[in-house]
Length: 134
Image (cartoon, rainbow, N blue to C red; front, top):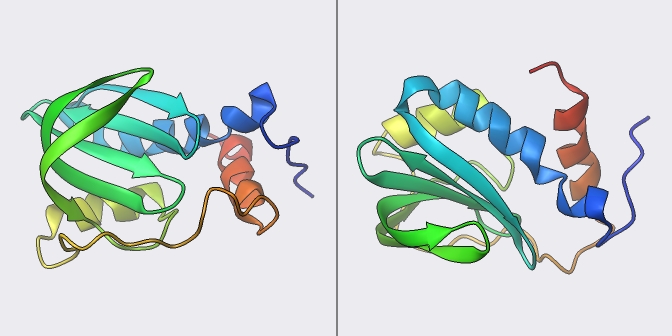
């Protein structure tokens, strides 16, 4: 059984880190850098070597576009956004597939859940990535 930390605790804010790290690992040499930005909603940015970036957040999942600006503590801005689809927490290998297949996703913002849904099972799903071998 996976125990999830209390909402807004330090451990809870860090829950997405293992998941995003696994997505970055799946992307391999395409990744320039990545960081998490853990607050309402928890999100993360993966900058790619080609000047694009992927942004994940706990409401809309992954989106891709041209990196405009952002850093840890500052929301990332993208141009030409394409929401990849695949749910809020697709498997890391699936994120690579969605990114590489232009048939998937759209410019329409997808919302799978709200960051205020604190007891919907999402945190347990996130915590399972921390329990997986990287």
